[in-house]
Figure 1 (cartoon, rainbow, N blue to C red):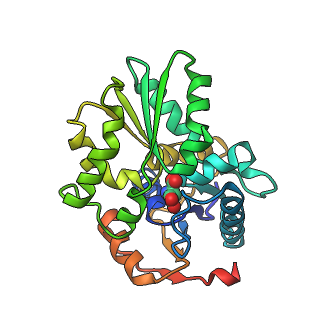
Figure 2: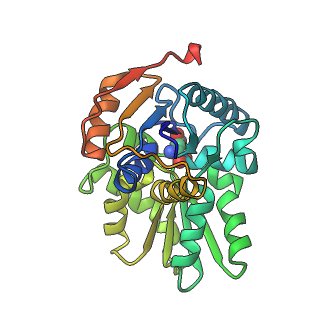
Length: 269
Ligand code: DGL
């Protein structure tokens, strides 16, 4: 057993999709969350900049004495690929593998769609892994760059007309593709789960990358005998921009108060 916290990071609110699932399946675990809200969005930036940001976020988490790092970000997971844990002293994992495995086991007709950030789609990461695990699969990817700013600004309610309009336009990319499974490959997108589910008329298997990553993190800790023995975990959040907005929207999504949110200066990373 290991009572140190689990470290989770993302550019912003998206990583909370993994935190929410971790709270549900591992309520005794302490969590240290790092949200790089001062530099969100990551998904339109170049790989070398994302790598530099990711290094700073992971260094920060290691300094908090975490026992593992969950990269709850599709963009960082795609850019780092196999290098994700290189040079780290704790196990590290991203969202790619658990998410693609879930998609491949959910699909019946082999037609899989992906919505993710522009950098993720351009990297081909999900597509390549899908082809490896299911060579006969037909894959269609669509970048949805407006989703992250919409979510970060609190436009994630399922009846939000603005987001609905944008989502309808993006999702029309799949109109003639006969997909039965859609990967929400950016962790911000599961905040739009209900909205996307209703636009696609509840017909698709929606794969939540944050949730799948959390489930895989539990498996990893359990295999390594590193689960905590505590009953109620503590959550601490660190962000690189204003605390208030993050705490308010985070509470709305997680359904619990974010009582410990601290601002970290980017210059100090
Ligand atoms: N939530 C992240 C992802 O999964 C980052 C999105 C962004 O900052 O653009 O890709």
